[in-house]
Image 1: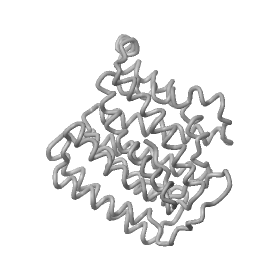
Image 2: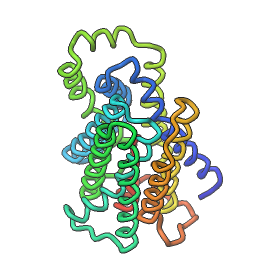
Image 3: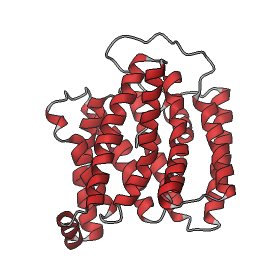
Length: 307
């Protein structure tokens, strides 16, 4: 990759890493499911009127259900339940391990020995993180985060089996799956009075957080990331995603004074090494940019990130 494109990839990782803290700060004023509905409303609107829909409505709905609604509803709930934002950015990367396992079972996609070794190592590191966190804080938020990672992994496998490209069109149109169910669940869980009060008393923090997550993390982040995937091999682009938990933990430390324990950090390092082994290709990436507007369908070893 050129220096310019490498810097753009790093910029996206900075946005996605900081996004966990931004979401956590916004949740102080808005119930989690309502906050989710607001975010994806602005991901879809007004671009849905200008961006052509992707082919295959069933696949778009399925990807939106798992990658967007399932993943983020559980992510927002975990943060609302007390999951540390920095640790959340790390635990969510378990989706890579889960994707490999689910793809092997559901679509019979046989993982390589390197992927099996990486997934095994990553699972061991993840177990250390869960046990270490559970020793000093409630483990329920971590389990909810693992549910978010599982939902993301299922969405990855659906996209892989259907050959759905993770382009801007898919991001915008699949976002339509989220607002109404999320709003309906919020009305049931939080009650109409609390939802109404939150909507009529949005703080500056909540508005800024919604704008950052919708415009920065979803639209700008995906716009840049998918343009890079259209130019370069996935093996040259996807490894940048390993920067997300590093940025997430650093941002949480700077903004929220969140300091992971030594055991949590050790488990996180082991997990990321396993994820790297499962995703980073040994083959040298082709440096010459590829031409053409199409975006390659996601591969199991390079599942597209969503934040």
